[in-house]
Image (tube, rainbow, N blue to C red; front, side):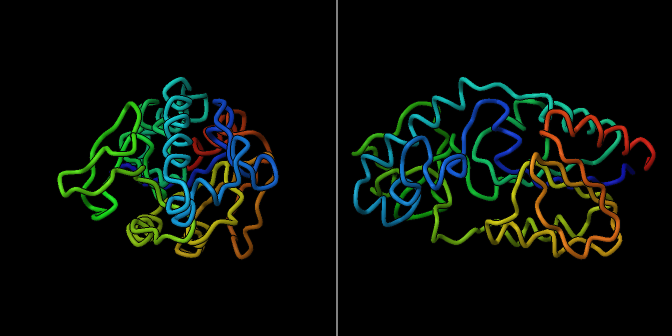
Length: 229
């Protein structure tokens, strides 16, 4: 049995592949107020704007490539049972080769009916107004917006509780409920945190801090993990 490595990733790991987050510039995401394009209220006000925004994000993500951090985590599957919990909506972990990826906040290449959150379809092109699901509901991005519940948080918490080793990469740990996942880590579990600006992780007794970009910090973590196998 391989030891289980559970990894929580955020926008910082994909930023090095050229994908920006709204935190890059005072609440703006690619020039938009995040609540205009990522909230139920924004959808009600201007669904065309929201669809246009995510259609462009989908194009951006299709053009992006996995970076050394994504590839490094995929390579660790040789020594560890790696489970990635990501706050990102992109598919860069999967394209790097990671087999177990749980998307907390949804996926850009999935869409769903506004009438039924479980009626989902894969999408690689654009979603347009008038595109309907089989139940007649307008199709929308299968993304968890601000103000919406995070259906997979319970599953994610259960995964964290099984960790033999834990890592937090590229996240500021300020968005809840995702940030609260660290509270489910068994006490004393070896843990790593990698980011340009390290988040606060009080109460962690076995924590290695790596204040570097994800693409650089992952090499340090891999080296340290060799001593744990």
